[in-house]
Amino acid sequence: MIGRVAWFAAGAAAGAYGTVKARRAAYRLSGPGIIDQAAALGVGWRAFSADLRDGMREREDDGGGEKQRRRRDECEAGLAAQARVHRMQRQMSRSFFVNRASRSLKISSVLSGASNAFWTASTMSFAAISAHTGEGSG
Image (cartoon, rainbow, N blue to C red; front, top):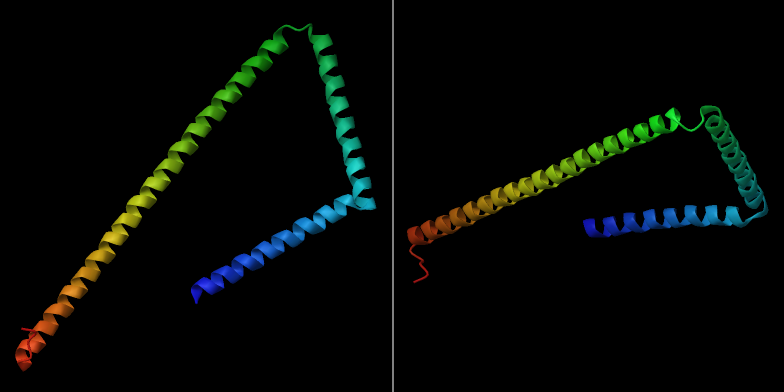
């Protein structure tokens, strides 16, 4: 029963996702959607051009010396910080999966131990009942 509910929920989610994607694609291909995309492209181009002009002006004012070295140093420091963050995230994800795997092993061993204990107790009680009534298996 739970499997059916899960498949129903998965199907409903996939249908909703597909509907949203189709609606967005239809809008992008419609007249107003194309106009919006062209306007966004124009805004992006103007921003890029302004950044390019500002960079050229800064380079002309600077003479190409100290600012470039400072930018390069800032870039290298940023890359080093990103590498540290990436290493920390990798270590955290490894420890998460190791902890999760060991936790699931502990749970399964506890469950199998409880199952074995129940099976042993029920077998012993069945043997005790049959010995008491005189109905043995042998």
